[in-house]
Amino acid sequence: MWNTFLGKRLKGFKYAAKGAYMLVRHEASIQVQFVISLIMIGAGFYFEISATEWMFQMLAIGLVLSVEGLNTAAEEIANFVHPDFHNKIGYIKDVAAGAVFFAAGIAIVVGCIIYIPKF
Ligand SMILES: Nc1ncnc2c1ncn2[C@@H]1O[C@H](COP(=O)(O)OP(=O)(O)OP(=O)(O)O)[C@@H](O)[C@H]1O
Image (cartoon, rainbow, N blue to C red):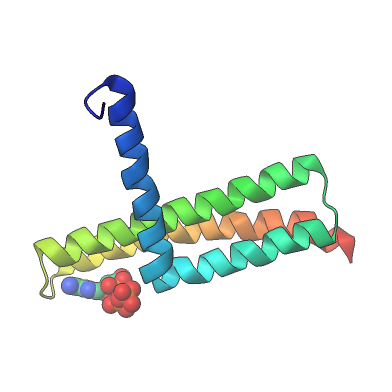
């Protein structure tokens, strides 16, 4: 069953779900972003934001969690291939963190646009 086209896709989904669980269970940066995401979802219900606002908010949350997860993967690869200090590893980690900076910056702007008018 697992060797069919559908079986392989299901297996891939199972590994991806396991990876998402591992990120939330073990990675402090993802845990922080995850808790902030839950707070923002709670705020969405509290302020009864519109369907369009929900879409932008959920896209922003997905963007931040995805990029943070990829940043973690990049860090893990860097640590695995070169555990010692190296300028190139530092550069790789910095640009991966820079990607999170972009995503988080956009998410903050989206949050401000949605919630500032509600006060
Ligand atoms: N092996 C390395 N060689 C050069 N610079 C490094 C190295 N490891 C980390 N750095 C520098 O330190 C910064 C933070 O590293 P890293 O993201 O691994 O965080 P950490 O605090 O060491 O670990 P964690 O994020 O798991 O708490 C990097 O962006 C990079 O500038």
